[in-house]
Image (cartoon, rainbow over all chains, first blue to last red; front, top):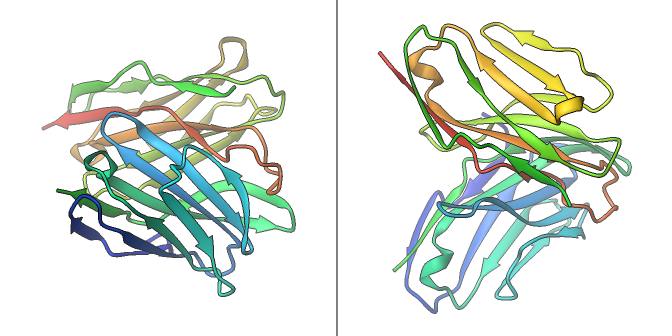
Length: 116
Length: 119
């Protein structure tokens, strides 16, 4: 158990819909990362938050957005869903001391999104 | 730009055989970290090892060993006497900065190697 909690574990929805994925990082971890894993693209970095602020952005679509709340949990919002958005979405957190991140990411079990 | 290449998409071995998973990376930075993660059939990603660019010593942990060679930009992973429980997808990853506010991509992953160990 990595200590990172993601909900829901599975989600099935229709095209055009909007979903929210939730992540609770390990206790004490200030950085939260979102990754998308699809069969053809592998693990793609989406976005990173540190202590409530966006710190790095990867291949995140404009239809997707995220935020990190004061209690450090994070949500990834996916809207106007398309078939190609079906994937496993991982949240990870890391030990960050001040402005230095040790780099070891602890991953949650992922949220499997199926868009029909 | 950073890039991680795992040329072996799938490997199948018989139990007790040794197997090496290859990882080749590209980065312009002199300071970087390399990682291996394991993704078993259950789906979660499990951290295996982190190695910084200044430490080229090989590391051994039980049946697992890692060979880091800067000269060839490789960070290969060997499992000795493989077991069925080793069946998983293994990812190699690279990070070039640990400044949280640097804006750099935290971890770049290879596409993974699926290892099947047959009893």
